[in-house]
Length: 399
Length: 129
Image 1 (tube, each protein chain N blue to C red):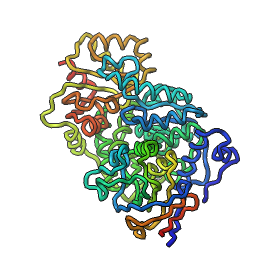
Image 2 (tube, chains in turn orange, purple):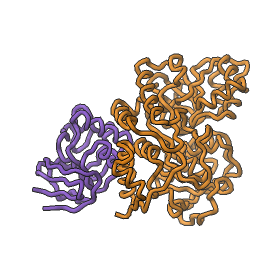
Image 3 (tube, each protein chain N blue to C red):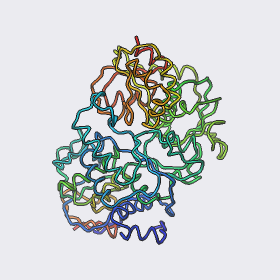
Image 4 (cartoon, one colour):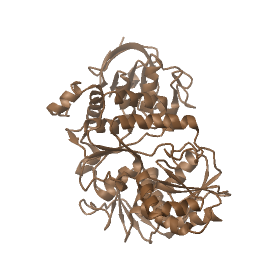
């Protein structure tokens, strides 16, 4: 075996630092051996997925409970969205039994010292690594954002491996932690202007689908002249959902685009026809919309301000959720946006989202500005879906 | 016959083999309460893997599958050991947290359902009796 451990890491593996640390190090060293890592590296922070009770179940909860007996996180660690808003779950139609179980899970994470801001956008609320830092994150959209937009380094962790990294502060050095695995593989030339969270999501689906077809993972994208944080987070969520992509380079936008050679072999162009066709793929025929949701990934304060300005003086006529991180909701409260939004009849769903909440079959058709939400709306919740701009979503909710 | 592979999780177990050429998804593909494969159209559909050495090429499906394996271990429905051609992270993590002996890098064509085999997860070997 190639993996070399420091004396501290050996102590962890031998159980000298407690059972949870030992179990964590067993997970990490085994993964290190499978993927041929030379050593372990320290991570700056961890993002843990697998928080919704709907996904964890009793099995996951039992495992977490065992790890929480003597496990404490050693680095900054945040959580993915849960299955419900922790304060407002009743108004959102969540069953009491589910709420009790969801809180058991979150309390178990808290016992280990994890910060229980349940959000898929940790980079907007204080879990913000800088360029080149090694991290161990789960949550595919946040993995893609931190690798690509920030230039931090993480593999796509699962729930247990992310927890193991948190409890030891380490991860095996393989995959995206190494320069040699971060080169672009496919050149994507975008020949048409792209604007808005919805359109960046459509672009993410086109590129993601193409990567699956080609069996490649890392696109190098040209032709994007500017992109906001909100557009990039929507793109990340989409390309990760449809393509399994954990890293992309975007010329002039992302920090590593000129660190590695531009791919020359596989070249693929995107034009207006591609955008139109894929957009129409994300609009189901005969859709009857009874649910509108914005905030996949979690809405930023900028997006909430936009929604508030669009809703001011209007009334919504459909179930309308704005899903966001609780700290962002608190800023919206302070700024007066929450009052405008709630006075209009829309609801905040903090800590959760339309992907992980247990709402399967509760609605007929959902309108969103997110291509990722379209995928899970169909696959997981059995809704018909329609993608549109934030403005179109708000309009739909108020007619 | 003794096959040399790679150790994934420690422990020595002797049990009957159940072999499939299909991948296994523990999340959704196996019922943790009964220990039976429930994936529609799977080669082992309807068969119990409890207490057997489960031999298959590699894992597939959701990462939640690791937790399903843990639940099976707690409910005494888990396989006694696992042998793979090429391990994936879901099965590896599942074996570690559930303490199920596991070896990979084995040519599974050498193993037949019903054979008594010894899996040595500490040495990374599989012996067919």
